[in-house]
Image (cartoon, rainbow, N blue to C red; front, side, top):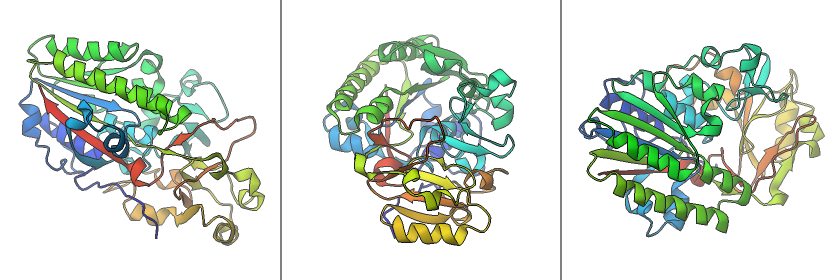
Length: 389
């Protein structure tokens, strides 16, 4: 068996962090317990609570490359993301307080049986189109059916995100009663946090999402000098933020949706190079390149399993989707009614150093060095950073 890391939904994951935040402000999650070592009373006693999500900042990266950083100095302990550890799935957890078991979004490319289409969830568009579904009259809010965290909290809430995604269908579907605060760049983001925290004596929840680290880790690699320089900029910004919040009675929590691994070019597996396997599929692989969902044609399961065992077992672990669903990979409790349809017949869990890509006609796979979505420790484990000022 591999060294896969599964989410700790019983008190050690980002969904448990959200349970603690919900409990602090008059709401309750009946499924997921509070985050260990984080009392809702501590959060409730502060005038402001800031949750800053740094997309892609894994615990492994912070502890290996962030020695001496202010972020690392305020690190409390590691926690896990959800499965798969990827933005479309984990950010939905931050915005709903639920694991994918309930919110039902299982990766960048998700099969929606209701629409007969594979969607790129965050841009809310069919995989084969550049047009968001909102323009066709399909509501993300109605399709997802989520109750935003902001609507469950009994305090004033703010949602800070880059201006280029602020008005996206996905973002607006999860905004609820929160006030939307678009920003341009890191300094603008941190300035808005400071302004809101000092604005008045009313208790507030301030959620802020920073995607810059993730974008560089994808394009340049998590081990690149470019990514390291951006981490230094983030750390300096965090230090300035703590100084600017001094005396505001604010608890600041920093965490992430996932970590990263770098993949060598020769270990990127194109499915076109395996036509026998590809012919077994009823639709292209969904999910992530590090954790993919395979929908297998009737009568082809035996051939599909045999081919992977003979030709690709060095690169991937093959699991029946239903088995992992019942094994709580995606969460605890009653599942979303469409969850099983969104994880296919099989799950391909890529081993260390490998990805698989299955582009549709006309689609060029993104030229990336860094990847996430798999079950390695580097991808699954994120930092829990917490301090009060």
